[in-house]
Length: 203
Image (cartoon, rainbow, N blue to C red; front, side):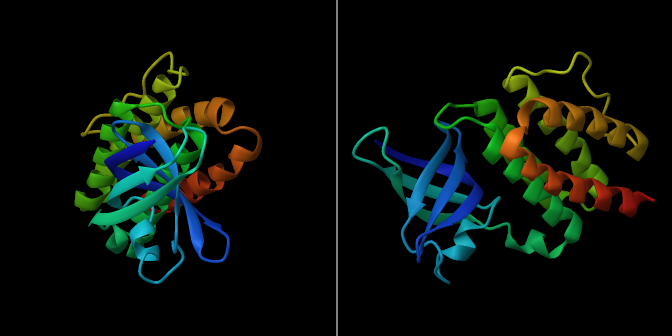
């Protein structure tokens, strides 16, 4: 296996004394896992921040083997982690994607939507600008995995907070029921933290 592609970092798990297992989303191959040697070092750790855009290169002798991964930073989202709402949103969307998607199956629409979602967080002066994108991303993720809502959340760029929060309640219920079950339900704590911060911000 050999893959070189741009990727969005989704999750990082320590492995051994110095390494890290990294899950990333690529447009070409979907979610791909790889082992980064020295991934816990002061040099590489900032590159592996969830939501960062990197150029990754995965190499493995067989398809079943965990690939070795090297990364080059393309675009850092580290400044966003200084803002509590933005940080909570990034933590949730990356964790959701990492645990919900199967590995090595391309989802080009989800890659584009996640990239756009993160870009909206980066560009929007206020949370309402990216909260609509969050509802749409969750709705698309459900649809791509076969759990589309019978009625799509009625949110647009002009939607106010009441409609946005209703939309998030709809998608959240379906995510909890169908995608994040068993051990994966731990990721819902990140969503609960985000929703709480959103509600307090607009109260």
